[in-house]
Structures are given as structure tokens and as C-alpha cells.
Length: 149
Image (cartoon, rainbow, N blue to C red; front, top):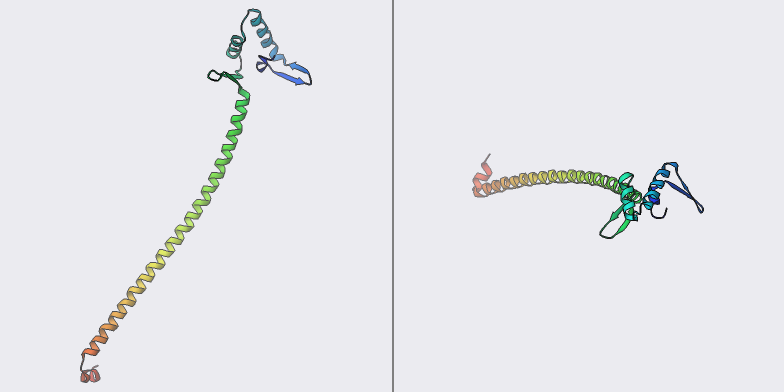
């Protein structure tokens, strides 16, 4: 049970361990392998080849990891990533709205500046016309000033 319990469906209550009916055949197979003098690693290999692999052996570290725990951790990580991704999408939508508002403000400012430029140009033209008229009036003799138009 200590070495191969992860291949069995068991339930522990207090000091008792209950084995599910589906695992009795696996338990008998384990017992037969020990009678044939198989070592623990060979039995693990045989059980993994014939059933659900519940242990992953990392040869570099020689560390065993329970596959069910790995899957649960992956599911937790996946749900955390989904949550963060949803928050990022919401944030992106807020940024897009802000960019649209800023674009509208910039366009309004451009129109205001363009209008002010046009007003300034027309005022400048009026000043030039007025200046040219003053020059014309100054250039005339007193006789022409009095009797003109």
C-alpha cells in the first residue's frame, strides 16, 4: 500500500483503509509480481503500462510527482490565468474608450485651431486693406482729399 497505493482506489477512515472492488485485481497483480521477485521500479513500470498513470518519474531529480496533484495544480493555474486574461480584456476596453475620447478632443482642438487661423488670416487681410487705404489717403493732396468721391 505504501509503495503502490496510488494505483489503487482507496478510502482511509481513521486507521482503516478500504479498497474499492475495482482495485482488487490490481492488488492481486502487485502481489503476483512480488512473488516473481520483481523490484519496486519494475512493478511501477508494469502498473503504469497497464493502468492509469498516476505517478510521473522525473529521472533528473529522481523525484516522484502525483499526476492528480499536477492536474489539479494545472487546473488552478488555468483558472487564475483565465481570470487575469478577463481582467486584462476589461482593462483594454477601458483604454480603447479613453483613446477614442482623446481622439475626439484632439479633433475638436484641431478644428478650433484651424478656425482661429482662418480668423487671424482674415483679420490680417482686413488690416492690410485698411493700411493700404490709409497710405492711399495720405498720398493724396489736400485738394484731392476734400473733393474726392
